[in-house]
Length: 343
Image (cartoon, one colour):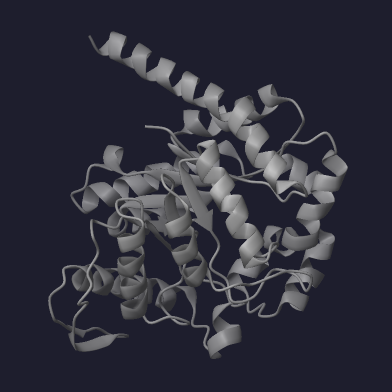
C-alpha cells in the first residue's frame, strides 16, 4: 500500500514550531512523519533539537501518522540499549505507529559528540550488533549480550514495546542495500539520483532479504524526496541551500566533516541547478505527481516529501490537497489493474 509522508526538518525549525507543523501534517492526511536525528545541523544558520524528546511530544499531539527518526545512528552517540528503550517508550504514546529508521551515521554528529569515527566496515558491524541487541531487548526478557562492540548484563526493558517496531535500514548506495535487506524490516534511502541506481539498490535489498528468509515484497521501501510547491521557486531554493547545501556533497557522509561550518563551506559549491536536477521545484501539481510516480514505478511504496519552505504550513496544506489524493488514486487504479490481470 502506498504511504505518503512529510519530512520534519529540525535542522531548520525550532522544536515547538516544528511540532505545530507535524500536527498540521497529521491532520492533513500525511501517513508518516519522519524527523532527522542530528547532533549538529548542516549549517551555522540551523537548529538541532533533540529528536527523541520531540518525537515524544509529537506522539501525544498526533493521531494517525507513523512516527520515525529518519534516521538515527544507534552505535556511537547512543548505545543501542538506550535507543531500544527510547523506541519502546515512544510506542506507548504512538501504538502501532512507531518505526525506527537506523543508519551508520555521519561524522558531523558522531565524531563531534564522541570523538569516535571508525571506518564504514566497523560502523556496519556495529549496526548489525545494535539491531540484534535492540530486538532482543524488545522481547522484554533479561539480555546478556556479548558482542564485539556491545555488552549487556541482565539488561531488561521493564516497559517493552506495545507492538512490533519495524527497523528500517538506510542505504544510499547499492553496495549497502543487501545489508539493509538482510538486517532490516525495510529500506530507507534518499532521492535525486539516476533511476538505474535505485533499481540496483532495490535489487540488492531484495537479495539480502531473501538470504535472510524474508519476503521482500512485504518489506516497505522508503525514499525521501526534495520538493518545493510554490509560486516563488527561487525563494524556496535559497531556503534549501541555506540549511541543507552541505548535505548535497557526498563527502559529508563518508569523510570526517564534523562541524556545521565545515559542512556549510563544502556546500558553497552547490547551486540551484543541482537541486533542480534532484528534486521537483514547481507550482504545477502535475509536475509533482509525475515526479513522485517515477519513484513508485521503480518500486518505492513510501514517499516522504521534504520542503524547505519558507511557508511550511502552506506547503503541507496545498500538497495534501493537490498532490497526495492524485497519487493515492493512481496507486489504487494500478492495484485494481494488477488484480484484473492476475484473474
